[in-house]
Length: 464
Picture 1 (cartoon, rainbow, N blue to C red):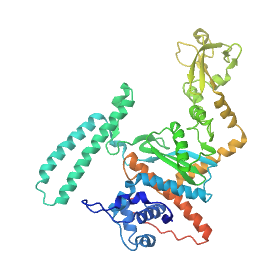
Picture 2: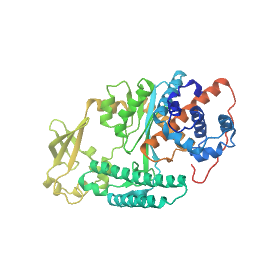
Picture 3: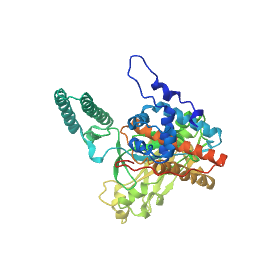
Picture 4: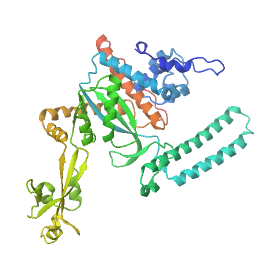
């Protein structure tokens, strides 16, 4: 299978160069095949793969009864990010040529993946400065101590570890300064960064807790991925345009229909997608205005939908018969929000004031009316039709399947490596493995050969 693909970018680093030390001579095609086979069995850690490959028949066949050191296996995962993206595109084009991807309907969604950092590792600027000062002092003391060290390898290893610790702390301080520049002055003192993975962010999980994580953005056609990326933000609304661009870049064409959930169907995304070749299909999101009023003590009988609007007079009438007149308007993206207010004297003398305006309010009741852009209104009307509701129900079947494949079958619930770049490379390997598995299953069905029995990989202490 790999023999039909162009793997020249993976081989660029193994050329012999005069005057430089030798490089590892392992064939990149063998290493790629070994990792893809291991990922299909849920093995993601290099030490576990090294131990498993010494007795597992499939690995022994790939290695020719040889062995590749786990250092080489681990370094290979993150050493070819650009080549890995190109390989993903080539495999995707093979799937498209065999009719396994047609881009008729693509689902896009995000999923959180835990970072290799703890919540306790997040520190403020003062603590980071202390840690960096301690690292500088430790490195200076280590230089003097290692002069008496007899073993050159041990001396170099300790010096390298100390330097990496110092450089990591410097990177953490730079990341903290960048975050503080994005925050208001009142919030800068509360900004924290992890001392183990400074690029990770605390994100809310399904159980309501906050865990250092990254968010994977996955685009899926039927059962195979057509695009992926890794971001630091927990918000999805700003990622739809980038997802459309990745799909077109990877496949050479835009999907006819793009299925997303309510976190992506913002007014801005609806307006941007309206003139494009991809029809946006998504839920309208959750209306939280009533939940906010309920938390403030407002009775359901006095929710805004119970107020009667008079278009000729441009005013509202509340359930108690009081008038709310127009005050001002505010321009939003894709909409105009108009503000209507009642007189304070009317609300203070109203017998229903405790149900409509609970608490001490110096002003009268406010009601906001949102007039949406015609394209946004047309999108809402479209999503009320039965045929589009039926199409949208397919979103979870497609998008959630890819998430389950990555997390359950590939074990990508937590990154083994730190940093946004290395985390994205892990995501790329897992996505490529899923697509290759689809390709292999297609070949089995065409040939009629029985599927091989699944071997059980080892579970080393601290492994996935």
